Length: 350
Image 1 (cartoon, rainbow, N blue to C red):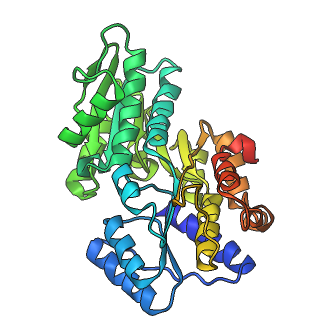
Image 2 (cartoon, rainbow, N blue to C red; image 1 turned 120 degrees about the vertical axis):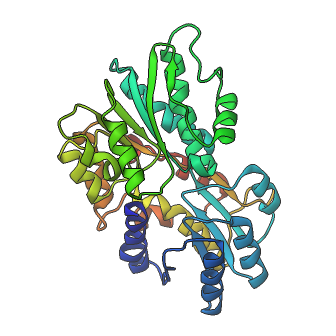
């Protein structure tokens, strides 16, 4: 994806040039079996640490690395609480730096509220991996629905649910959003999954043409999927993804209206954590546990803001996290490391 490629450029074009490291990337992986094979290859080739950007089965990967004496870290993601409890004391589990489920919920909430505050009342939702019961996307959608309940007036609910936990439970059970009224707010269309065949795109086109639709709220990339269908309409598209070229073009052309983006240098701290572990100086909390640090998104609610963020993010000569700033993490304690990671919003870093 554009997001994954932006992360890769930071590692290969900046980090690799400034630290004595070499990055070996896997191919795109389709299932847990492919991941296991890729990890085996990395271990065979004497990699000291593996940084995972995505996984079908993280516990299996952690066990695989631990058995081989190879460090394992999670970039731009988290373990579930049960998984963290299982692995937090494992010496080969470095930890995770990324959005917690609470942050994912908030990013969906802020996206919907952006349009509700502008007086919009008619929405469609692209739920992506809600269809596969993926928590990250379920919590983003739950945030969207919660904002609509707040704006919908007395008695507003989503299918009878009014609080976060109930909404999350309903989405997890159904694997989809059921269109309907949320008080004065309307969810008039929904599309989930990633089939991306002719039938799927036909449903997308039909959803965009729904009478009165004002905005499509997307748990991931929205402009690539729906941009071709909004011509001649005033429908706005909001996405969660990255500060990549394709989204700049979408903003510039008016196809994309809002973006919650991970900045490419955000994966700098987890690199330092993996690097320190490989050098024998891991970052652990006072109880000796692995990292579990929250890091969220930059929010661009118009093209001018996106352009400013894009320029800051794409400059790999002086990235947001440059060597001088990352070097401060090489010998610091857990609290200093956590404070650095937590100060992630654009206004703080710019």
